Length: 329
Image (cartoon, rainbow, N blue to C red):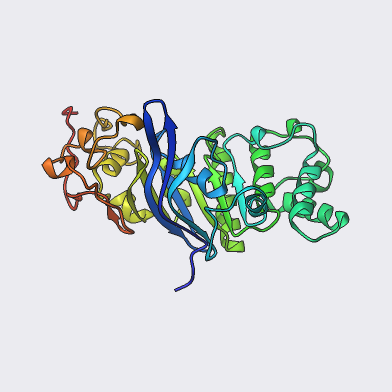
């Protein structure tokens, strides 16, 4: 079996606070293969972006990796620091952020930013970097790329800026791209274009993509597999069609029942009662049990169940069970 591009093993991120240590990522494991798009989905605060930041070495102190391993193309990278990690960013791992204005320098032209990245990581001349910059803009669908390469970020629309950021993430041909909410700030038509662009580039280049989002529609449209996170833990992981059409974890079931498309013609949208716990008050056992209509005493006691590929982290997986709405809606 081929070595995965990215392999995360039992990853935990810890943040020391005055009230103790909190873990926004707690024992997460998954792989991403070449040419595959893995969607990472969950509510705000579920740990999606923190896991991505841990992979690319962008955790803000005092947050740090407290346990686990991260492997990139068969090489362990979670212990890389300083210059070693900077060499990985851009060259082997590309990053697409939610707001392109936060990752583009407003004082430099788009061409200068692309060429600077390539000259930092690739053994090429300035002329070749400039040629590749124009080609990269053309590849992501920027019209008139030869002229627009001299433009500044503020001269592009939001959708075009996001295309530029994707070009910047891919210009050194990394094996892994982490896309953190890349379509959130865009209108629906532009979202579809960006999703299509990511899928095409992934297919043509064989790039592995970690697509972080809270949008189940984006997950259904863009991904091959999906990892559902809750309170820093992996609730369920598997093939996207299996997870979305026949979810086994009650939390995934609730997410799908609260989606308009999934609930079409089935009455009121479902609402998951309660709220995700604070990181300093995650309950013992399964973190979802206070909100789960199927919880038993087993769910309330450690150890917590662990998700594996194709199976939920649940003692009582929902196989052919109807969703229970505690509010009677």
